[in-house]
Amino acid sequence: MRCISCHRLSRDVVCRSCRNRLLTPAVSRRTVGTLEVVSLFGYRTLEPFLLTKHTPVGHRMYHYLGKHFLSPFLSEFADKLPPGSLVQIIGVDEYAGGGYSHTARLIHAVKHPSLEVIHGKLLARNRVTYAGKTLQYRLENPRKFRYTGPCGGEAILVDDIVTTGLTLQQARQTLLANGVDILYAVTLADAQQ
Image (cartoon, rainbow, N blue to C red):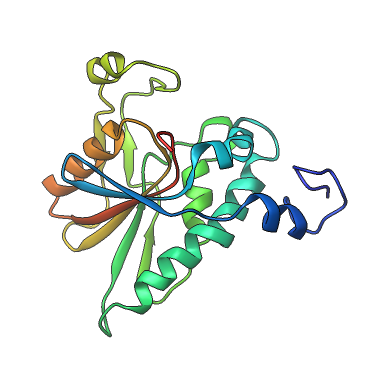
């Protein structure tokens, strides 16, 4: 396989040299409503990698980002939990458009005994895309999430990008209505960075 950035032969979708040069996390935090959102990168840093979600290499890229960045971040959090704790990891809208769900690929890489990955249980009933849309458009076209997973407990929401934060807020409200307490949300990139 070839590195998606430099096109040299590589065992992974991004070679070690490009990973060290281009993919250095710059963790940022912001509050959206009452939800704390932690982002691992600024959007500009990850933009070429995130845009692969609509290409044949996207499923490998998102698994790579989950394995090398999301999973270590969440594992570090989980290592600090009291013994016997269990926190759910819930991907926002794991709809499989184009053959796979980029959010599912991210959270699939999370492996820790104190973290329980919940797949495909928080889905939007409104399939409209928000990419490039105004805040007004987003407000007029809510996601209308439906949650069919376990009720109660604590969870961390995961998505690829936070822009206005409306999607995360809507997801949080749906989960709260089902008794799930959201500790915070994690995204790969913050579009405001």
